Length: 357
Ligand code: FES
Image 1 (cartoon, rainbow, N blue to C red):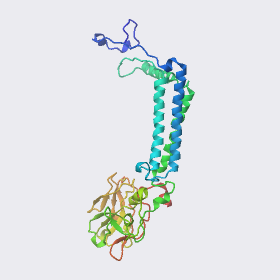
Image 2: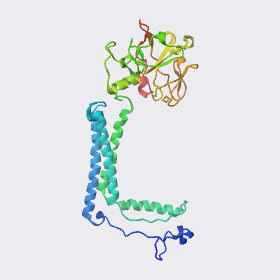
Image 3: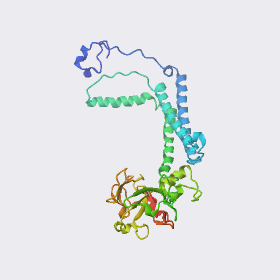
Image 4: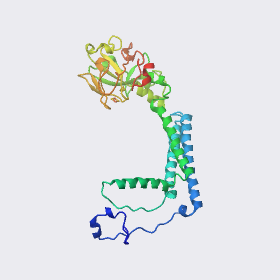
C-alpha cells in the first residue's frame, strides 16, 4: 500500500480496520535491474545458453533410446559397481535430459522473463467477475511479458526438448511385459518339464508324496532352480534366474480326493488328492498365499481374488478373470512328486494375446 495520497486500485479490498494497523507499510525496495535487462549482449548470451541446454536435453533423450537398444537388461552385469551398463546409461541419460530441461527453464525465468515486483492486497475469497477477467488479462500479460513469443529460438528448443522427452516414455512401454515384450512366446512357457521334481521353496529338498499332510499348503519350486551335479540342471544367473524362479513358483495342497471336482482332472493330474497350482495370481501377478483349509479357498493378498482349489482353482471372488493354471503331477519311482509337463496355459496375469499362444 503506498504512503502518498494517490488512491490505490485495491482500496476497495482493504478492510476498514487496516487504518488502525500499528506498523506502517514499509513499501518496496528500489528495483535492481539485471544485466540481461540493460545489456542486449548479455540478453543474447543468456538466450543462447538456455537454448544450448534444451538442445543438450534433446541429445540425452536420444542417447537414452540408443542405450535402451544397445544394452540388454542384465548385460555387462559386473560393470559400474555391479549395476550393469543398461541401468547406468539409462539412468544417466534420462536424468541428464530432465536436469537440463529443468535448469533451462529456471535460467529462462531468472534471466529473461520480466523482472517486476507485483503488489496485490488480500481480498475476499469470492472473486467478483471483474476480478476474474482481470486475472485472465494478467495471465495473458504475463505470457506476453515472458517473451516466449518474441524469442522463437528459446521457445522452439524448449518445446523440442519436452517433445523429444516423450521418446523414452514410448520405448519404456515395451517393458510392460517380462523379457522382450515382442516375443510373447516367452510368456507361454516356464522351466517346468516332464519328470522335473517339485522341491520345497528356499531349501530345495524334494517332496515325497507320502510326506504331504491333509490340509497342508506347501510353497514349492522347480528342481532346476537348485542346480547340482546330482540333478544336472544348468546354473542360471541374473535376470533369467529371477524370471524363471518367479514363473515356476507353485503351491501344493492335499485334500480328500472325493472333494476334488472334475475341473482338477483328478484321475490325470493329481496324486492321491495332492494337487498343484501356479502360485502367481491371474489378476496382476502377486504371489497368492493365504489358504483356508476348510473351504479349500486360497486368497491373494493384493486385491482379494479368491480361488477354489478343489474346483480347478476357479475364481470365486475378486478381480481375477481366470483360474490358477494347474501343474499336472505324478510320482517317480522313488515316490517323489514330479511334473508331468509344463503348465498347459500361460501363468500369471492375463493378456490379450494369451489365447493365440
Ligand atoms: S494380484 Fe491377486 S487379486 Fe490382484
